Image 1 (tube, rainbow, N blue to C red):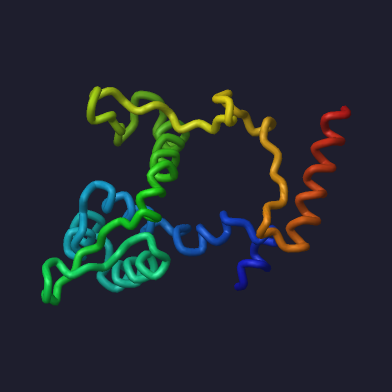
Image 2 (image 1 turned 90 degrees about the vertical axis):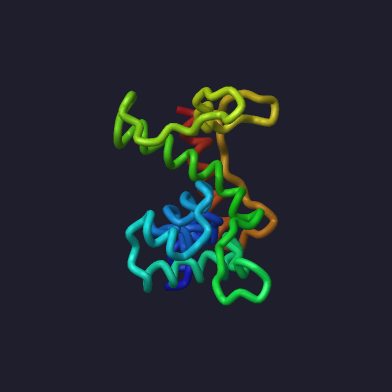
Length: 170
């Protein structure tokens, strides 16, 4: 299915979910953040079938999330390293973890807690803030067409803005 049909807004979420939306990819990325680099290590730690791991690693490399590099010069074996693009997924990984801890496991039942290495304290919850530092709630945020929006997306975003205006009037 073409993404434009799946998501008429042609938004980033649909494109990201196209290569990250199934569970194995995010788990591979999590393991890469934990320092796992080699095929066998991913397979051991995740219990993933070789063919699925091969497919997911290739897709993550093709999308610039991981880079496949020889273990040493001239070696036939490779390792997988997070690229800058991949490293910038850290807030997403933390947010998914924190959301799951709250809504799946519940308070004081978190399976993984991320700590600040310097202080040893748990990191703060990931929140959305305005440029001036204010914490934003969903109702404080308004989507608008960006420079890459197509005609269909612009029309849909105008509908959303109109709906928001009507809701404020009530």
